[in-house]
Image (cartoon, rainbow, N blue to C red; front, side, top):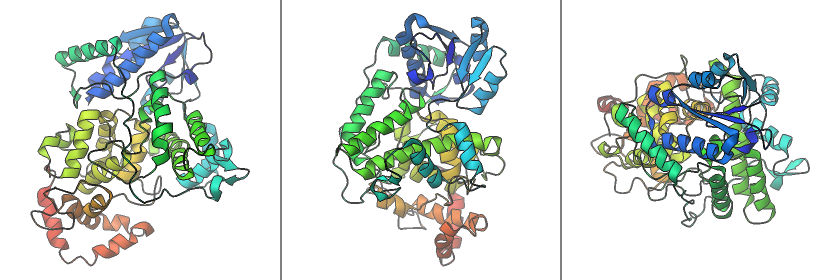
Length: 482
């Protein structure tokens, strides 16, 4: 039967044979409904068209206004692997001529996760799931024990790693030129995008993805896992740059982890870095995916997620030039120019600022999904709501992720040369992240009361002498660009 592939199901592991026919549908309505980052739209369309070119006569490639129109144009029965969003799942289930297969592209099956979570009696924590996945799939295990005798191995906080060579930049081809022409035409027709256009920076084919994976294994894996570091002049640090390749389905997670483990076994990468990579891929990534489906409609950043207001225009449109706070300006500029920033910038700067200002979680999930080339609803809800927005304390983490400017200063080089002082809470030079942090704790103190991981911060709050001035100052700042 012909296999319908969504844009995040483009690798060979989504097919069952070398001769299986394929259906690929480009839906223009996807980009008409919401303003996506221009480079994200380019990457998605380029990936679909590169896959169609690879498959040749096996692929029926349709460019239509909607998925429904494409299915009607094809007219025959097709099968599709379980989609990665609830909206897409509900759509394919409602089609008479579509057979829905189990999900692929993740390590633990949905059935296995549900059985594991049911047995946890409401305490389905990430750390426990990660251990379960390690044991179930034999990752970094020496007999029945974890390699090195510990499940989590701390990465050294010593000197920063040397400046690493950047990931290989894809070479654009005629397909990319065609995509750019189409997007220019769509813009002229009134379809809106955010961010800047630019040369494609992420893999759009499996060959490019494998090339980047090899670069990571050789150059970046030995330095992977220094979680909190942020440098204005180095957007990559030790990060893999593989998230888009996993999320487009160009790479398969478990084989990638196996290769990283081989680097450790061969003495080419330290256990701490390899363990951290495994934790991110078979632990955190799988955990967010499964939690999205396991909790289903009960975890959509909905009515229980507190939020006072919508995202202001300057933030939503990536207007970095209007921002004076260097960390926030740098973060927005990175998203504007690349559609990407690593997770520490997303949490400690972008998500942290949103939580301090009380912006609605649903709006932030939508923004992250549209503005980032690797943005997926299932990942953004867990990361944005569960962590940076922590609207569902306990489902993902027990710690509210909000930090002051002193944390940003300690973990980055952003504060040097900034007009704001991260040590100041009040005054014209007071850091908006520092003042905002204490104002946020004051605003949410009743909700956070009883959370053991927030006890120390709340005790500090009770002894701040200028709290009233801080709250008044931050209310006056409001949502204007800092």
